[in-house]
Amino acid sequence: MTTKNKNETVKGPLAEGQRWSASRKREVVLRMLRGESVDALSRELSIEIYRLEQWRENALAGIDESLKKRPKDPVQAELNQAMRRIGELTMENELLWERVKKPGPLAKRRSSK
Image (tube, rainbow, N blue to C red; front, side, top):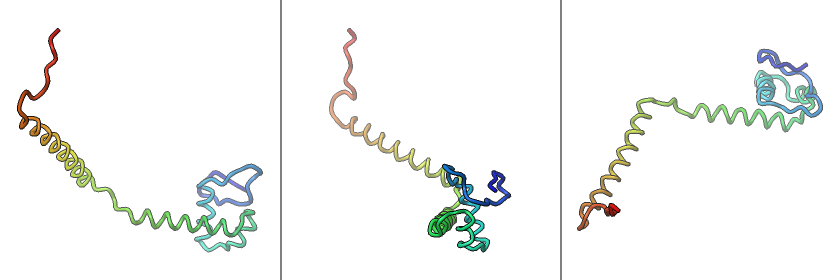
């Protein structure tokens, strides 16, 4: 029996031509993490053991990666944006000073014709 309800577990193999969605894989991985036998799941779902273990390893790697991320600090984000803008303005200022130092007019004028 397969179901779309997140609270129920996935049971049985998929129908012909049906694909394993991320949510179905998550349910299977959670069953493995709760202690269900990989052999039993393999038989029940008609999936190779190596594939089930691959799903589990990918899930654990994703968990590790998400735990490494630091929460976004809004003050730091604003500071980073301000620093980028300061850099842009500094570059513009330097370019304008280079133009001012050159002899002659600051910009070429177009004829009024």
